[in-house]
Amino acid sequence: MKKFTLRFLRDNKGVTAIEYGLIAGLIVLVIAASVTTIGGNLKTVLTAIAGQITVPAA
Image (cartoon, rainbow, N blue to C red; front, side, top):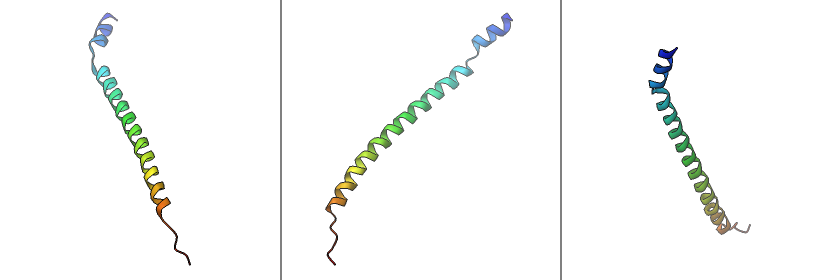
C-alpha cells in the first residue's frame, strides 16, 4: 500500500489535466463575455439603422 501511495503522490498527469481544464474554462468565459458584449453593441447599431430607414409612401 505504501508503494501505491508514493507512486500516486509522484504522478503529475492528473495535475496537468486539471490545469488544461481550468485554462479551457477560462477561455470559454472570455469568449462568452466577448460574444455577449459584441451582441449588445450590434443590437444597438442595428436598432439605430432600423430607426433611420423610412418606408416610401405608396
